[in-house]
Image (tube, rainbow, N blue to C red):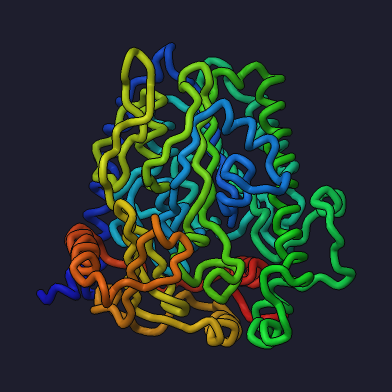
Length: 502
């Protein structure tokens, strides 16, 4: 079979593959049920906080100058901060699938608009429930309504199914606290919380916007109605960093970060009042970042540059983890094995792409010596851009299979995604030779402005070889068309995955 087709399987074989996956998943889950409960010297509970579209560099603990995140900053000061963490996709469904399974998108077949956790890999909730945990999934985004995201969760609530969810962070926190208050106190719990803000369209509560100061515009630009479809014209008129209209957009984004930070304060204080905080491991991360013209466009799910990938990653369990800051390059695929390790829950034995970020030294859990590792990120939405990124040491390599220039993206959003009646994009071989390659030295060029492919061909070839080796372990892409319900289609339009004006 040609190398470019190793991860592609004819339709006639899909049913057989799915049956094998189901049997494998059942055997793995049986092993999970034999997992030992956490030991007394480990945190019993897990709260996994995923904040949609949150750039790490818009938090105070990652060096941001504006006051957006006092509560997250306090968690970071008492916890372990991974300074150079990357998401494994800039699209929510792909990245959350990675977070919940510990496997990369193409490895698990969790790719494209309808990406969801693959059936052959037990989810984090399945493993923890098998170890006796009470589990719950609460979110404010309709992007995660596929039933595979709910696998292993006793309680699943999508608090936002229609309309915009800006400002609903407090409701999400309260829902989690109400659920925790009704639990069996003799058993540990795991709750996954997905906050939507600061995801577009950046519509913060008035008091949060006032907190950010400055002079908000009387008629702010709407990300989907005004900014994305008209970006080329706006830029010709002076919309750039430093201009009043640009700074107003960023101010609205930052205000939503601040509002979600307040909701996390409500959550943490509620855990404290219930007497469970000190026995809880809190993990704070994001599904992806957000673009603000660093590479001539806005929002996310278009590229894999650092502004789309660099996310916070904070582990808080002060009684068991010494506070500190880790500079090693890591990614969100490492969260799954790390939390199982910290909770003392046996690993199910599935093939993971992540590793535990901590090791036992001197009788305490401390950051592991991770050495030189590759991190792979993918964006495989065939209606948009299709590309993969490899980060290793100071190098970053981008291999692109489909590329829409910034001036083409608004039209693509308006046409290709207008109806979403069926999740299927233009035919594309997800392992074809790249049509575009980029190589950056992140140490000298963190903004990814100087493409070194021509001047460093040996490095580029070495990095591309990482993707070739990765390809050998991949499964079939999840490109099977699926018809969306009217509710799901409307939710995608509201969240900006449709044409302008929606």
